[in-house]
Length: 394
Image (cartoon, rainbow, N blue to C red; front, side):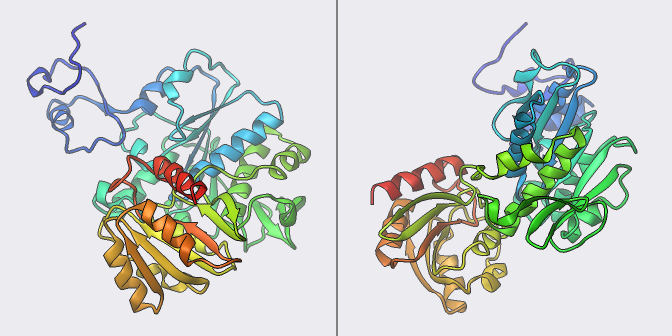
């Protein structure tokens, strides 16, 4: 076997190759992808490759959506483990699917977070249960249009039959439209609607088929977006017979996923929250809706050219915006247009120090960037870690 390491020499890629396995983040405009298409060579990714080696009888849960993927996937996994199910957490959440091939067996449960990037190059991949948390505009720079992005998300239902299950957000119109013509058995979760198929919120309780499971007041998680994630997870694990007590045991102590509205610390009665995972407007809308206290909003990052106007109806508790990174001047313009004070800084470190200086006891300092991290950081995890470091240095 010949190896070419450290680069991709164009001259070695010819029509003798049988398969191209592409990292999900690599654009379809890459020269190898173009050549593969020219030679009619299948282009797949790690998820598709792993699927082809999965054992028969493996239960596959796939979770996708614009927001809530990681939290929902994690909650599903924790609930299954609490009920002593043989479950494995994998996928876009940080654990390569291929690494589980040697240990997976029939009857096991693969719990996968699946991104739109991963769904671009799947062919045979199929789940038994697919969760679509919600859909809103995102990753247009990668896909080229919102319609293409939506179509990629719809692939989570590929090859579904009447024996497979789709868990859908009844309150998200886009999700319902995407799933309108799929062949799956559809089951819904909803904060606002009641019917026999819905995992819903009724009189302050999360219910499954009219069976009260847990009071919202007992949850460690807060915010309607988190309640939606919990309901989606419950709808999934009930398909595996998970009992109510196991669900309650987990949800009473589960505090969320790192970088997703993560509580950091309190200094001088000022609460700090790390929501670095918020790389789009919708995520920041959700974050702002979670707080009633006066809020110092820290936002900024890579400039993808998207408008911030959709945040204007979520600013009622924001008394100051601290903007940083490539988008800081556009954020400053947006803040002034909406009558919000704004301070601009080049780096996240400067922004964090200044947010503390300008905050008062009783305030919330919220890092919810509404932008990707790539102007200054390799990924949102590093950005969130650095924010926490700067907070603890105050």
